Amino acid sequence: MGWLQDETGLERCAANHVALTPLSHLNRAVAIWPGREALVYGATRRSYAEYRERVTRLASALAGLGVAPGDVVATILPNVPAQAEAAFGVPACGAVLNTINTRLDLDTVSYIFGHGGAKAVLVDTQFIELAEQAAAAQDTPPIIVECPDPEAGFPATGRHLTYEGLLAGGDPGFAWIMPEDEWESLALNYTSGTTGRPKGVVYHHRGAYLMTMGTVISWRMVLYPRLLTIVPLFHCNGWCHTWMMPLVGGTVVCCRDISAKAIFDALADEGVTHFGGAPIVLNLLVNAKPEDRRAFDQHVEVFTAGAPPPAATLAKMAALGFEVTHVYGLTETYGHVTENVWQPGEWDEKPAEEQAALRARQGVAFPMMEGLEVFGEGDVPVPADAIAQGEIAMRGNAVMKGYYRNPEATAEAFRGGWFRSGDIAVKHADGYVQIADRAKDIIISGGENVSSVEVEGALMHHDAVDLCAVVAQPDETWGEVPCAFVELKPGAEVTAEDLIAFVRARLAGFKTPKRIVFGELPKTSTGKIQKFVLRDRAKEAA
Image (cartoon, rainbow, N blue to C red; front, side):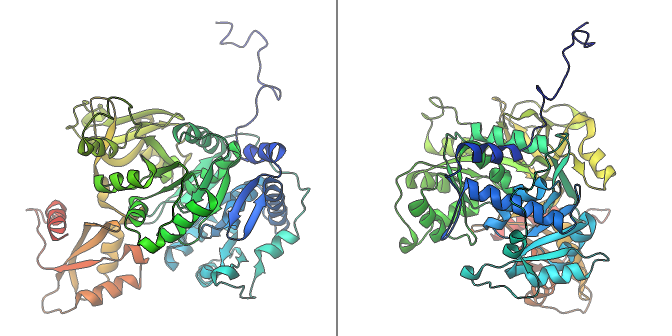
């Protein structure tokens, strides 16, 4: 009992305990590899020494703008160096980083500005009008810092302080504000609003640090990898990959516009060894035009998530020289927290179709996680028979602190000491889990979550619509797209094109239905719309 009662003088102190934070990775990297290439974007090449100096200037300049520890700094940026530098620079001044999806509509961005309380926002010139309008809707608007990209066709507007102008006023000797407690908030990421308004997911320093450690192991990384930023850096902070790269002396290769040509060029010219992306990215590569393909001779590791990759796509990716690993996670889990660990020998001998089926499973927990389970009725784990269905639940260090300013949703998500994902799955005999269906009618389009409830709400604003239901329709390009079934009011007339345009004016493009089907909706005796019938119809039509 003496050990438990701390009677032996074994106490925690500065010598034996330091708060875990991914900020430490960049400080270590610059001490070891000051001249090594850290960040690449077109003609831009930055060493670790230059990278850290710019991050430090950013932290200092933000503090000079009045950003205090605990304040929120938002970004509306594509995969450009400013986004990577913000990953370190914002928390280095003690602030909380809020990366906002560049594909969101004005109303949602305005909501995020207000709910998160952003003190400042770094904005790419391509999205400057969106940021200006969203800021104007706030009682206390955030300070806008414009990040022009002339080489991409977006020169500065002249209306705001520019990013380079901000950095020029920063102090390269600024002392980073490191967390005293690893539970301190690091980032604020908003969900895609699958049940209405998006929820603010809060990350802590400990979780992000351990996420970087676990990913290095699971992605089979050695020193000096070269990561291509295909996963949007606003999405779960790029799955924490930007924070991870200094840990292994790696190079972040920024990719602003995702295309097969851009990826093949990066593979051939930059020696890229790792990238992540939804199955839509894999389809881009295997279906690339001959003129867009480039030869490369390095081994390339790919993480894919968002939907099970098709067997044919996996086979073609392997033939091109890619090693694809299926992973799974959510905004609430910092990105990927399960992996389909390949079992060499036994699985290698199976037929190609069976191997593809094995690769489609979501798998087992990452090293930094403590538990992965599928709970059925009565919160009892389902049998490992690949038949019984339940809800995927996780626990471990890569689970959010909770939903910002939403204690009720946090309590529900953490019911019983597990994070409840809302995804329905089965468990195989070997313990690997596999998603069987999406709960709450979430549509996964191009790796982005689309709320059927949100789309239905937009449709119901149209005067001609009496009832509607939105479900996922399989799509070769995007994985899934919204398909709307609409029951019109008596005597009303409207075309499918008119309804699609009506929704597009209210929601982001990827949330807009790609198909409208008119007719009476199937209902239960109590009037509830039978969405399972509509899902079957959408699949048949696809």
